[in-house]
Image (cartoon, rainbow, N blue to C red):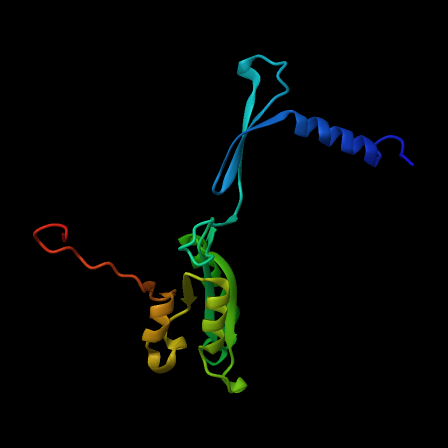
Length: 182
């Protein structure tokens, strides 16, 4: 039974009218471009609507099912024994750097040595599961021997907050002095 004054059937009729007023022009990887208007207005009063989708799947066979994101994903990582009472500060610094560098921070992996697990196991599993591009840590002190593990750099870009540095997994070699290699 229909409700009076703003019931659901009226809402559906209004949505149907709004949808009927849009004419799809083109769909592209990452969004849709639509022209709004019902055709009764002059050409100057029509508006354009551009909609972006944050994630889309590729249709290519060679991509291995990868998903393209609007922003690259990263994780944070810290050790409770190193951060101590400054853990909340370290977490906020990780978040701020992720935003400044344009990353989508998926979460912060907090390692507690009392757990008895290997220090980087959970981080590496999460990075694989989320297809992360980078990990942000407060500093190198959060790794064993105050050194960034080479195995981790082969998997992810490692970014430290203080001092701000990036250990990139994909460093492109410089071309020879004679120009580009054949």
